Image (tube, rainbow, N blue to C red; front, top):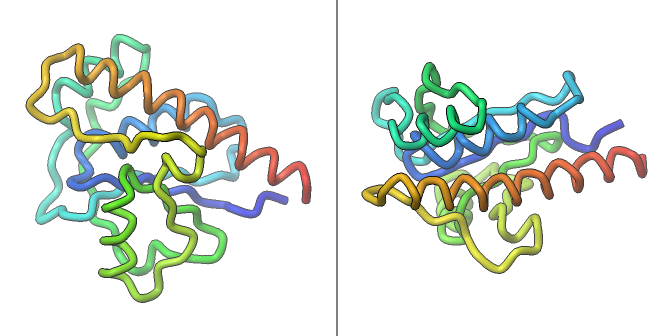
Length: 153
């Protein structure tokens, strides 16, 4: 039995990094019972995915063109939910804003990597491509870690 039944990837506005991470995870995930979501910390209204992120994902065979941003809410937190945010600062913000927040880690922290997943906003397509490659590396590590925990149970 897997410790987590749900994973939520969280970025600032929910229009790029979290949606990319969700799509990458769903692309490699074989556990159909695992629920995967993307959320933003600051979502005033639903917005489409950043067009450069859509282009990079499409070049990798992943379609995220119909995705939109969704606000992180207090109901998202549970003991069986893993919340992975893109930066350490965002992790602190989640704990400040949600008194019931549990199982929140920066994706860098969870995967034992050195660097946060910073925003590529305003960068060129190659910046988004580099961001995708780093996210793919981290999400693959998340997948292995989550599923190796399940194998131990």
